[in-house]
Length: 500
View 1 (cartoon, helix red, strand yellow):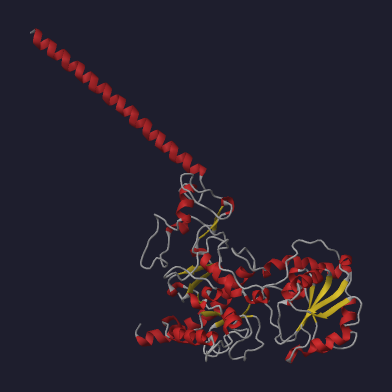
View 2 (cartoon, helix red, strand yellow):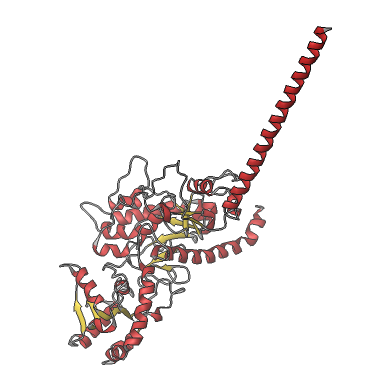
C-alpha cells in the first residue's frame, strides 16, 4: 500500500515537471518568434521602400557584380538579373561597403558609383587585338599573354606621346575608359560598358591606335620596304574581313578611330562601311566618310584649361588672336590673306608660331588675354586651335566653310562662337568691324556659355559626366541606333527565307 502511494506521488511530480518544462519552452519560442517578426519589421522600415535587401548586402552584390537573385542562363553577359526590378537608379551612390569587407577605392568611397551594365546606354564589344595594335605602340609591354594594361591604378598607366601628338589622343582615352568599365572601383559614368559577347553589343570597337601608328611608324626605316604603319593596316583589314561579326553586318556596326587626317590612308577604303571617329572630312571622299554615318570627335586641347576664371571684357586687351602656321595649302590659303589684312593692327595678335621654345604655353597665355580667337581653315577644315580657344574662354571666330563640329546635334555653337564665311573674312575691314561691333554685354554672354560648355571638351581618365569621352560615347549610341535599325530592316525577309 505504501509503495503504491509513493509511486503515485512520484508520477504526479514528474507530470508537473514536464508540464512546467513545456510551458517554459512555449514562452521561449513565442518570444523568439515575436523578436524575429519585430526585427524583420524594423529592417524593412529602415531600408528603401523599393527593396527588402539590406543596403550593405545590396552594395556588396553590386560591387562584386553578383546576385543571389540572378537567373543565369548561358553566356554571363546575356543574363538578366532580378536585382534590376528591385533597384531603380542607374547608380548606387554614397553607400559604404560592409565594414568587414576591405575595398581599396582609388577615389573616395563616399563618391563611389556602381554601374549597372543593364542601365548603360551603350554596350561595346572590343576585339582582343594584340598590343602591337594599341598600347604596344606606346612602348607598353605586358606580361606573357597580357593583352591590356591594368587600368585600375591611374598612376601606372602607359603614357601617350606629348606635344602635338596629344591633339589626336582620342583613341587612347576611349579605350582606357572602356577598359575601366571592367573595374568596379574605377569611378566613371555608367554610359558605355564593355561586354564580352558580341551578340549583345550595340557596337564593336576596333582597338587600333591609328594616329600613333601614323605619327610614329609611317616612314620607312633602314631596309624596310613597307612601313610598320602600312603593315599593321594590311594586317587589320585581313583580320576584320575574317571575323564573323564583320561578315554579319558588313562592318556597319564597327567603330574605327582614325582621328589624325592621314591615319588609315591605306585601309580606309577597305573599311569604309564602318563608323569612323574623325577630326573632320577634309581628306576623305564623301562615299567613304560623311556626317550621315560617321562621328566628329574633338581634338584634345594642348594649352592648359584656365578653369573658372572671372576675367571681364575689359581685362582682355587683345581683340583677336592667332598664332600658328600661316603658309598653308588648299583651303588654308586664306591664312595668308588674313595675315596681310591684320598684321599691322595694334589690338590684333597674328603671328607665326610653333610648339618650339615654349610655344604652347605662350599661346595659352595669349588666348587667355584675348576676347576673340581666330580659328582659320588650314590644310584641313579643323584644328585643335578651336578647342584651345574654348578651354581658354576666348570666343572662337570660325572661318572655315567646310568644317564639321563635334556634338553639334546637341550643342548650338552659335551661342558661344562666331561664324564668318571665308569670302567675307577677306574683305578689307569686314572682320575687324564685326568684332569691334560686339559690345561687352554680348561678349560676356558668349563667354559665360563658353565656361559652361568647356567641360564637354576635356579628355581625362577616369572620365566624368559630360566630358569629351562620355559625349563621344553618347554620339556613338545615337549613330549606332540608326545602324541597328537599318540592319534589322534588312533582316525582315532574309531570315525567314533561309529558314532561320
